[in-house]
Length: 204
Ligand code: SAH
Image: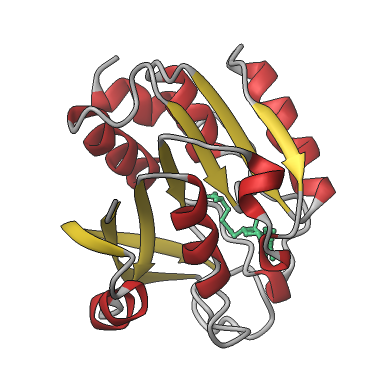
């Protein structure tokens, strides 16, 4: 599947019906999701791999990974309503994805989720709750050798220090995230947030 085709296909997916600010529920726009996934595929991290999506929301990354040929895909989110939309989205595109309700902050990721080869995720950036992204990084490093994650621009120094001896950043891909007016505290109709996609490789 070509990048443009993946992007157009992911465009068909439904987003959050009633997004919750506290959980930082922003669906990854199709162009950014497709870019992350396509890049991961070119690096050999998707086709035939066990892929996990932490904080999968309505499933765009998980479903995209399945479309690109992952061997199995598991999506995890704390919000059952988002997971219901994710299941509908997966059915719409006829993909085989397992969606599980779990709180990534609770720890015990390895036992609950099992091993994956690759994590793809767009976790909360920590705008509402400081350091909300840390349990996602911990969980990703616990379950997979390779992680692709979207972060706010300028996070690289923090991420690098946080993962310290556990993993290294092997790639940085720039992108932008148009956020539509969703919550009362948003002042513009659309705000472009600059982001960076980082590839983290666990140090064995
Ligand atoms: N990955 C999706 C959603 C991004 S929004 C996409 O790319 O479109 C962030 C997601 O993290 C939301 O769906 C939210 O419900 C989920 N989330 C927030 N805190 C969580 C937690 N502690 N455990 C699991 N999921 C959580």
